Image (cartoon, rainbow, N blue to C red; front, side):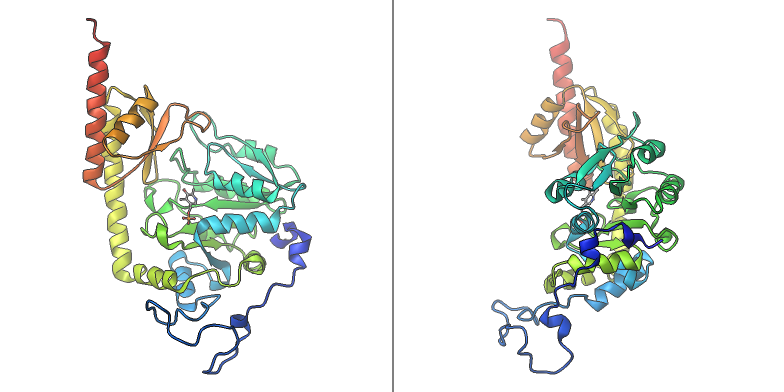
Length: 365
Ligand SMILES: *Cc1c(COP(=O)(O)O)cnc(C)c1O
């Protein structure tokens, strides 16, 4: 089955905008794009020119990193742009829907609302695990995209690979399965999770989102990838803005993706994992902490006796964490990113003081 058959007919029929840069054959005097012929003010090699719409070196490097063919990959401004493009290409306003499993990353629903697409929910179970049968039961014909965040933000658990593949097979001909792997680098190598990017060729309806924002320490550079069947990628390219990637961002990404960069990334991921274990053990001992949810990510979702008081105490110590109390079944929780060991120590110290203070207040006079 051609997965593009699920897309909006008007997008399938769309003649994309053709930019000056795309139409440029060769030559050394470029007078076709109304650019400035002079060097950029403030420096930057070639920044007076529009960027390459498909930067070859970065495409090659990322395709190698994710083990896909270059035509199975689209690089955009973070995976956020990938989510937006998918929703716009596959969901007609007022007719189609996406499916999400709350609690989950907020951008899926936000993009759907902007597009005027409906949102169908099949919540995670009581242990924050994906309920594949509930997802399948909720996938009505209107649902074109099923979003699975694995490992999950904000809860932290991943979905076993076998479950993802069962879902992909069952959704074939019905919907695209979009697996958001923003945190997959942090998952335990011995676990049953891990990336499903190797299955992109096997399931025409499988889409994987990856990003340089988390493990690669490049959130400010905005580089994320959509990995999917080449026909899906070609469709998304049609609606992508003509010059998606700024030249300095491409250069920064290529520098980070060097073999030195990759080694450092792996060392930091290992340190993050060991700090995650340490934080989980230490936090669980504190009186103010109710529960630390298991995590395969670079953060911990932590339940508190009084999350408001914990958040205030941390803020008073200069530590900003994410309040996730608005999410279903996380009404008493904060999400704490794993920082450097010294930053993590500050969190522990602050919460130890809070625990001691509240124990004292609990004592009879
Ligand atoms: C951080 C995050 C992203 C955003 O990634 P960008 O590549 O920075 O846009 C995507 N999905 C999830 C689940 C995230 O937590």
